[in-house]
Every structure is written in C-alpha cells, then in structure tokens.
Image 1 (cartoon, rainbow, N blue to C red):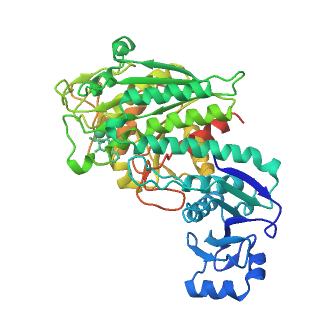
Image 2 (image 1 turned 180 degrees about the horizontal axis):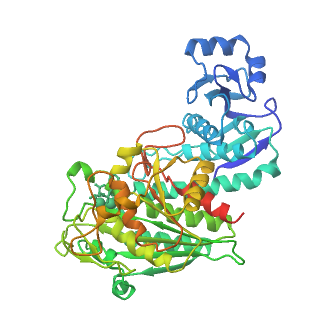
Image 3 (image 1 turned 45 degrees about the vertical axis):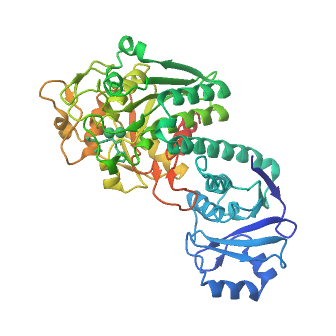
Length: 484
Ligand code: BES
Ligand code: MN
Ligand code: ZN
C-alpha cells in the first residue's frame, strides 16, 4: 500500500522525486519560486535546453541530485487555472515518470482547494497501474510513499483513505476488463462478487441457469444459449441503517462478445473481452461504496454471460420475453447487451429506486459519434440526466447528453413482437437507448454507453492503455451525492 504523508515545507522534505506544477507558460505553481531560488540559472538553462514551456500535459524531468534533497525534479504543465481533473491528469502525467522510484514529494495538490488533494492523489495512484500478469518480465510500480508538501497530516488522512479506495476500485475494474476472456467466465465474476460482498459486508444473491425460467430472465436465457459457460444474474446490496436514498446500478457483463450467430468479423472481436466493462464498473463501485460506508441504499445488478454461436444459440428471428413481459424479436444476435440489460433493468425497476443508472459497452456507434474518450448519456427525466452529468463532472469523467426522441421509437417496432433488438442503421446508439427505456417503467433512469472510454486507446496522463475503469468515479460520486 502506498503511504501518503504530509511535510511542512520543501526545504525540509526528502524524496526520490519532487513534482511541481507549472501554470501555462513558465508561470510557477506552488513551490516554483522556492525552486527558482535554489536552482537559479541551472533551472532556466535546463528548461531552455529542453524547450519546456509548461504547456498543459507536458512534462520535464531534471536531475537535481547534488542540488536538492531530491534526486530528480519533474515539472508538469497543468494550464493557467487548473480544475481538479487537470490536477489529476497532471499528477498522472508526472506519475508515469516515477514508477521506478520509491517516493515522491509534490506541491500539485495546493492548486485548487480540498478537491485538488484528492485529485492529485488519485492521479498519482491511478498512473501506477500495470497489467503485467501474463508477462514473463513484470515491471510493477515501486512507488511506496507520496509526500504532500505544506499539508496537515490529520486533514489529509481521510482524503488519502478515500483516494486509495477509489484507485483500488478503478484498478479492480481495469484488472477484470484486461483479463483474457477464458480467464473470466461468468462464474469467475460471480466469485469476484462474492469476495467483494464478504469484504464489504454486502448482501449477495446469484441467480443461476436453473432459476432463469422462474425468474423470467428471457433475455439472459436467449443470449446464454450459444455458450457452454453457465450464465448468472448477480445482485449485490449495500443496506446501511437509516439510508438517505436508494440507487440502483446495472452493468452489462458480456465476458466475450463474438456476436453470436450474427458473428462479428475477426477485427470486431479483438476487443470484445472488454464487453463486461459495465459489470466491472458495477462490482468496483459496490466495493468502493462499501469501503466508504456511504449512507445510501444501493443495489448493484449485473447479468453475466458469454455471447457465442454454439449449437444451441438463439437465431435471428427468435422471440424472447425479458422479465417485464415485453416481447422482443431478435433480428441481430450481436445486439445482445440490450437483451440481458432488459432483464436486469426490469428486475431493479420493480424495487422502485429513486434512480437507476446503467453502464454498458452497448454500441459501436457511440464512439463513432463521440470518439473514444467520452461516454454517451441518455435518460428518461431531466433530473436523472442532471444528476449523472453533475457527478461525472465532479469526478472528472467526460459524458455527453444525447437525445431520446419519441419519434425514433418506431425504429424498434417489430413485425411480429412488441419490439425488435435492432433499429435503423443511423442513430444506432439512440435506438439501443430507446430499447432499454422500455424496461424501466416510470422509474427515473440514466444510461451510460461506455463503448468508447471503457477501453482507453492510449497511455496518457493517469490512464493506461486498455481497460480504464471509466464510470467507477462517476457512480461513486453519484451515490455519495445522493447521501448529502
Ligand atoms: N459490444 C458491442 C458494442 C461495441 C462495439 C462495444 C465496439 C465496443 C466497441 C455490442 O454488443 C454490439 O455488437 N452492438 C452492435 C449493435 C448492432 C448489431 C445493432 C453494434 O454496435 O454494431
Ligand atoms: Mn454484440
Ligand atoms: Zn456486446
């Protein structure tokens, strides 16, 4: 576990690396004046040599071993008036340069009030992540200690705990998403859920294939039919005494999406081990809110299965009946996420929570519209949308509100059943959201299509290429805000 400590000032602090922010064009952030005084021309000459101006996201690393009580100085550009997310990103960018060091001291948390302490710590912790399990040569981060300069030990202690809880949860989601498909059968995710429940004192119920008929999980039955792996519906509950509200979170858990009989082309399958990112986000969020003891009642539900084209697979043209009784014509077995979510959403809607939020790698059309780093947000009430938007903004995750027009509803009209699981070619993500809406009744609901950001396309700031855990920070924030 990375220790997080406070030190009174730079002059008395010692660490392997010192990280100091630069605001815009060589405009010193906290600690910069002291550095300039200590290092004089050495600093300006070196930065001239590197042509380092401090543009947002840029970093410079300088050896200062004989000049300061640090071995290296890392300067990071954070922009002229950084918000917590810019601080998180700055700490992350610097963090990428210190994975082989044991300790770091920093002033970056001094930039923008209490939110910046948390953001800085999250940025450092998240940037240390590696998925090394399957490499013969492992290079784990050596970082053991983060020293916050000019901070108060008692004040930062709760923030340090919180940052560790968030980073652990995000890293759990990243691990699950990055795991190869054969190593994360539905049953493996069930085991993870049980472990989270035991550690966090959560209630857990797992419905297995024998119960699907009685529970009327028609969507899950249809999608699971082509796979040898037994599917499951996982239900985790956080039940504090005197809860301040009741939130349901639902995550798509397709451990591998081959497309089923509507088989994907090979390139389309390359990343489909990540099609359980919504489930990973829900499990990780439940772990975090249990650890934080948030005074809100939360139910976390995730249908987990594989979408395969085995001999028993559902066929285009089959009709399924998810739990709320709406009949669904399956025209494309690759639109499977909405089928399993139909059961999960129906199930939680029966409990009439204050708000349902689902997270799903639902449509390839969503990253076409928004790019890979922004999630699509849909909802059936303005308040549901605003709550998720506010939580995402506070958590530093990018979401964009998308329309849910009633006049597109006919896109999912079926010739033989109540609705079909495909729509028109255009507006594919909207059609999928309109499909989900059929299963939440009158309960306030928001839907996050994380098909893009669930998998980060490159190494940047605190993100590491691969499973990102996108959504965990937003859902934890949303649940905490429900308790305020
Ligand atoms: N899991 C995919 C969506 C996806 C695609 C996520 C690419 C991330 C990257 C989903 O199950 C799917 O296949 N959706 C289809 C729906 C279509 C058949 C209506 C799609 O997006 O093509
Ligand atoms: Mn699919
Ligand atoms: Zn899918």
